Image 1 (tube, rainbow, N blue to C red):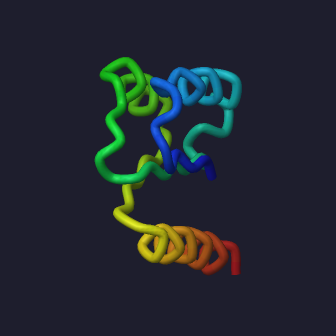
Image 2 (image 1 turned 135 degrees about the horizontal axis):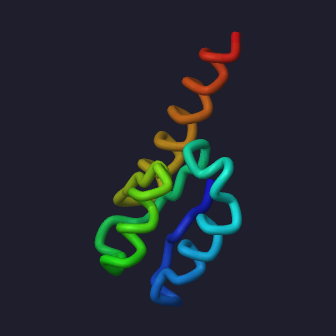
Length: 78
């Protein structure tokens, strides 16, 4: 899981990370705070590699989202 809680960069690190980890991109979850924009290039790369993108509004919702992802991943392995 990769979290983007503040807009400190334009998101190029997401493109780099996705490219480096392309073999496991479909298992990656990128979580971003609602209202933080992503460039069209970043969206294209994430879609091309099948990366899961989730948005949240506040820390409470972020925690719920992470718990949900982990819970369903654990259920599938059981």
